[in-house]
Length: 285
Image 1: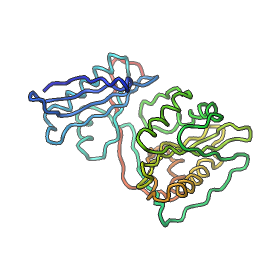
Image 2: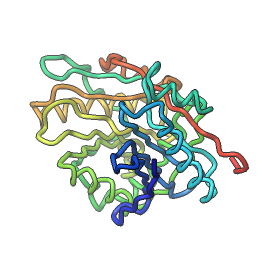
Image 3: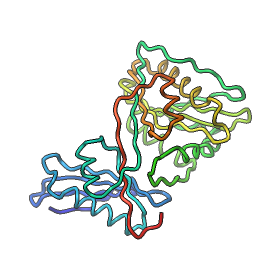
Image 4: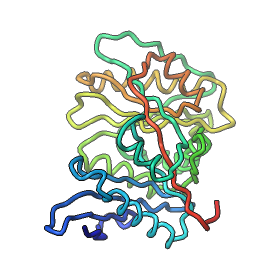
């Protein structure tokens, strides 16, 4: 077996490895996303089912750990894995620890009645598809930290810096996939964004759309903004994309406030997953 590091000139923040047999057959892959700031990197691994339990995953994990340690990172955070799955057994068997549990929910759209969007006094809503309008870009950058303190269990999560270029890059990435990023934001009387919620509609406007995140800045919490924004967004996407079947959300079990909001809006659990973390010895954090 040979582990080959790969390079993608268009994704310099992502490192990749390919595990192959002596005859060239691909056995598995691993990816590591370098954080803009902070010491925790997201990782993803996949080993072909027929090649599991033969050391491929262990070799790929070793490459991830070596690269992260060389760059001074403090931890590796896995993608979500299903409880009881092969992925979870691998994580446990290699000493990773469970740091976050997620509950996935779905809201049916077709033929379902939804709670009304009740306005919050002192605020107004703004909606857009794709890239944020130029006149809201600066305040949207200032609002993005609303997600930085959302409950993340024991995961070593470091906030990443935001600027207008990063906002545009995310919207462009969604557009290149043929999908639509739709955003609803709550603005103060002075025009500052106090909170926002994002949703990605699949290409063709059919199937289920996926929530990307909902955040309200600390000084504006406890007033019902999250529920108002999400209820308004539900009505809006149902009108703009009448062939959508439903909306999907994943919420940390520790995020009690958002779980209650989603439940009140009609979201119902579909399944659960967990995230595991590998702490890197000798690193700070």
